[in-house]
Image 1 (cartoon, rainbow over the protein chains, first blue to last red):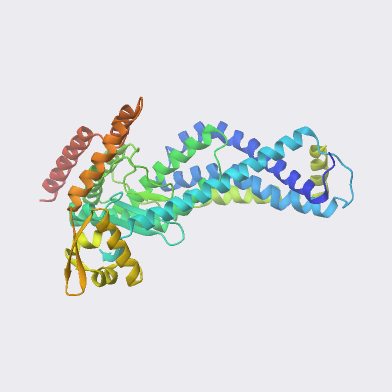
Image 2 (tube, rainbow over the protein chains, first blue to last red):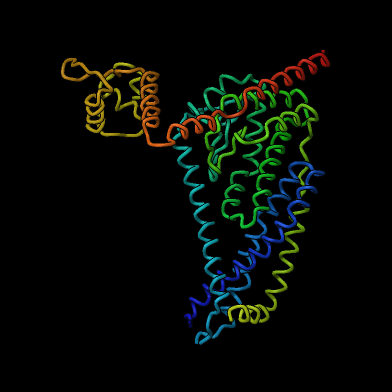
Length: 312
Length: 118
């Protein structure tokens, strides 16, 4: 089979995407147990950043390699007229790469759609509670942050009536912390990066847990009274909830399948102070990635030769 | 139905004013007429307009819907009933005994904190 110039570019991009995704996906999945053990010694916010970076790394690197190396080297060095044939391996990799891209788009789109429908169905009326703009809804997940671009803080009438003023204040601060750290956007990025190995799913679950802990710490600020009030709010909201599915892009105060006991114990035993912002890890990962990609970008011909071999 | 349940007796104009998106008067009139024909609303004529009232309260209506759904499942073939029961169990949410235990723990902690402060 001799594909045209543009078809070859498409084939090469998809195949490279698949190979890089598999390589880094396997590497990250292999590192997952050690990475999770390492995060146990960290504060929750820092641990959440580590876990999210690792979770998104294979997809992000694959996209960067394709957009930053494969496409430019191909456009620069590949002759327009060529009778090169595509090998079976590269063709299979391209099909799988296209399937992963399709799956990513499908997951992202359905997550956005479900979140939009959830918000539309919840309806509600806007109000100000404890200085926070909220939407009071009839039913729902008790307290939740829904949506990505313009997230709404939803509170059910049951939760509003059932929580005492200190419980409500600290629960709202918890949700505000999710809002500040853009957790729903991070959830969307996770949807756009399909977990090609089971280890990636484990990283995702751990990230959700640490993000909740981080929001707990930021809401309570190390104050034991506020920690006890948040623990009480969690139990009260859990009583109002069923395990009915909550869309992926909705951050609920209490997720139906989470280990509530562990979270309550953590709040009661050792109220932790929120951590100071430290983005050293992301900076190191970003700098290493930029150096590697930058180095290869300086030598696009080498990249092109490698890709030629791969295509054959 | 939501408007009629919360407001009680209403004519077409009242409902049209309270719907959360702009709808033509005739659209609301047709919808209310259909709900009347389906047996969900009662109506009486006052001067030249119909006044509508819900035939069932929200609670009765929800009970009727749930009853019909359950009856439909139980009358279904094979494992429909079992599926329904397993679905109920899945939706019960957090374990009530665990929540009670956590609540007791929180109460004790709060008492301890109050004692420390006083």
